[in-house]
Length: 356
Ligand code: GLY
Image (cartoon, rainbow, N blue to C red; front, top):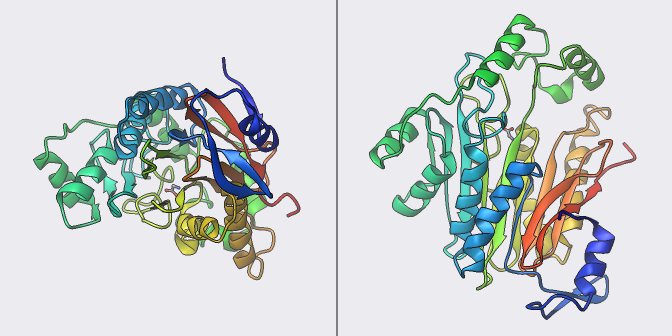
């Protein structure tokens, strides 16, 4: 059965006496020592597919497999879900109706990374990113070159546009408006006007949906993936934060890992995932690191548009199995999926900037 845990009772649970395989780690957090919860895998996706993904990744970790294998397997589950319009197959297309995918992977153990951007026709961009990471000396491959590379490695080509996504895209085209991406950047426009415009078209999903998967394996090695179809109806060729190492994803085997979803433009400028990992290096908990990154971004915008608040959701883990999750000015606290030897649960984070 699923249980919902808040940050406070997560720590309380972590301090309980129940968990069989867990043991105390010499890690001071708020002046106390917490129990290690690794191996562990987490994702920003909290729907049923997110849970299935966690089970697929956990199976690998429970059998002693590597974090990098676990995150790839879990991300693939989310990528192939045809109902999910934010990632992989069935993702919302660019403004021309073509699905273009971005993904990155980072392996803390080898300090290696791979990524693809604007990749068309391949259901599992995270797996192509892994081949880039392991079989080339490159990190980021884009567009046609990435597709040809994937073909050479035997990835099957298929149309990624589902009937559901095509209909949503057509509704968007019928309502083409002054808030498409040809205008000036969102943070220099009136956010409330943009939001109230889109409220008129609730059937048109206009979003930056993405997923992050982060894991620590039994050896303490850490890996992560961020994968997405990017901003829906984007200008063809637009690359978001997801395939940019340090922006949509960062892993440091000595510290932890972080990933971002939401408006990639903010995340690229702030290198938010790298920033979160650096904050954890400075002793901040994953939760505090996520909130720090939101504060940093809002601070940057405060001079140009104090009414603008970014749409990001950040997640982070450290190598001891602590988790963090934060978002900006939402009606409800952000949540993330967590799978450990204690089962599946949803971790509830914090709204990082409630006073804006
Ligand atoms: N965070 C996904 C994107 O902006 O493309």
